[in-house]
Length: 449
Ligand code: 5AD
Ligand code: SF4
Image (cartoon, rainbow, N blue to C red; front, side, top):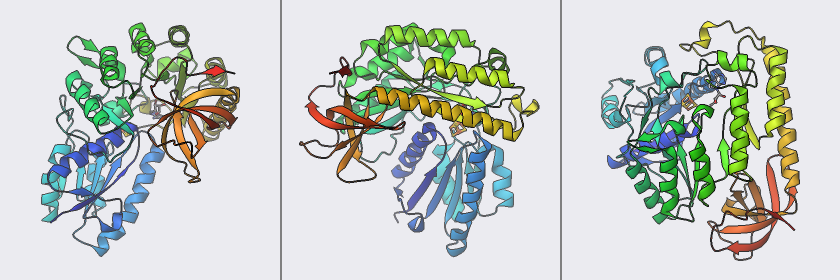
């Protein structure tokens, strides 16, 4: 019988990509995906441990799902992903409704675990691997324009606040050939954008080939396919990478470069392995080599020992760089990490206030940057109908800004369209149709009348 699987995914894009791998594995065994939890035979939560609030949400969700199990005792419930290792005993022993707990490197065993669960046997697979990359698994992807491709797994950086090296293990890369093949097959299916994913993509390595070589090889597959990537660690971002972005018209002019803090003392406490001067130097070089490049970042407020002055340094860096966007968090101690042993000495209300100041500054900067775009023309990849109205399309620019434009003028989803920006908020640009672009050209993407 055809069994239906429902997966809810939390956390980063890597986890979203992993859920597609999970469905790729299960699809081969005759399982199909459902978007309705009520009609599922198997319910998975693909979990995230990066901050405590992510974990709390998942605990709450497990409580809800437990009620489904009371109605249907054959339902198989599984916890996948980053929480698996840490919580396996608690989930299996105390919360009896969970049938399997499987970490990020053991998804190949899922069919076996589900079979056992159906006979009442609990399954635990939480070993981490030094080699597993799932590169032979074709991820299950519904039709669309954008796809994620996981190019490397794990992280060897050991930032002191971060659980990833413990939940996802050591760095390992897929072969360049397998990734290029995947890009080709996505291009043939009509996809228009791929995002190459890894916790630290700049450490990608396949023999002599580094991440720049991989990007260039992916960009060559299809000139109409936008290539994005995330996440870059500032320590490993080379000039070669910057030139590769600059030389290839379809590699987006957009770099996510987490700074975390503006203070060298805090960066050292975080084991980030760069100074703020080094970081700002990269931004400056990138702006020289790639005209018009945009940056986004991650910032943590209230890391142990952070003083008011050090917090100000973070605000100063934000004002200096003027990021297009930022993911901003309060420091959250994670068991097992180095920082967990440090005293979490910034009081909660101070963390909250600092975070609010960080968010406010970013909003103001994003608003100002977007206002400056009014009157310019941007190339937009039309991705879908706007969430708010069927009369509008939503798309994105090369530097990842959402643009809303009216339906009409023979524009179809998947087209590249030149749009004149007429209005802007901190999160969205609005514009009028100018022309459909036959060829995706990077230069000039931006010019003022
Ligand atoms: N507390 C707060 N933020 C964290 N991040 C990672 N670990 C923690 C933590 N313990 C943030 C970092 C990272 C992003 C993915 O999540 O900013 O870049
Ligand atoms: Fe969360 Fe990190 Fe795991 Fe992604 S890798 S799901 S951010 S803990």
